[in-house]
Length: 326
Image (tube, rainbow, N blue to C red):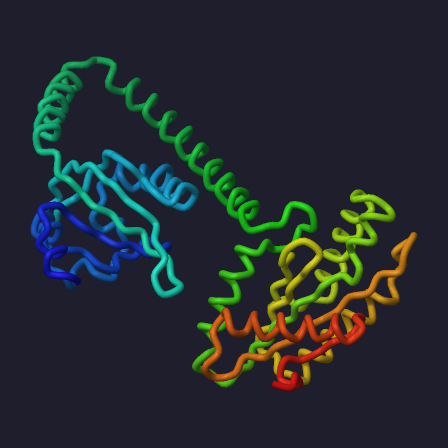
């Protein structure tokens, strides 16, 4: 960590999407009275109060995933001694080297904490004299149960929003953003190993003529049927996506050139043989297989060049990038 950030006059902490503490500066370590090795690599819950754990799950985590930032959020941290430390939190979601980090800065709010402590003391004294303590506890239990139900509803909604964010609305396949993330993670997973990775790019031949002749509703139905066919032809580990317009993509983990060509030809044949109603439909396919030194961009570029070779060669055919003449 940069020394200026390590000793900055505010706390800094960086989390991954599993809420694991990846980095924390000395300013915040000192405030919490921990040693670095006691905190780094641990779940954020280690330094959150009980109430803040719920608040973190209900508001902070969904908000930073959806909006990619959090501004002026009030939350309480828990020091090693158990003392509550109120802070004002700002955070942003950033991508570095293909991975996402949730970077947070924390500003202690001592005056507000002292004011709240005085209020809590008064409340405790009042509670001791309050003959309705039992009833209040029962009401609190009801509120806690309601909060848990709302939390479950929010988690379900968050999952639905996540699926919507990565799904193409017309075909039901993954969208291009999800494709890029999946391709990056797949390449990172296999780049240092012996298992191959292949990518197929597919383009519906003369799709503009379909729209111009039969209308865009017919064109949309063709795209939907193409999405259904790709889902049927995909294996469990494959990632099928709409690449854009009439183009589709298929990430093939653990698949070498020979197997990729076999899969591509099977899909091409099924498209050609399918009953499309008013017009025959064919596709052109470009395939590329990861080799050492490839990146996400270079693999896509190779598959794209192979696709154009298929189209320029007469369409309704499969071309592998390694067979192109340089």
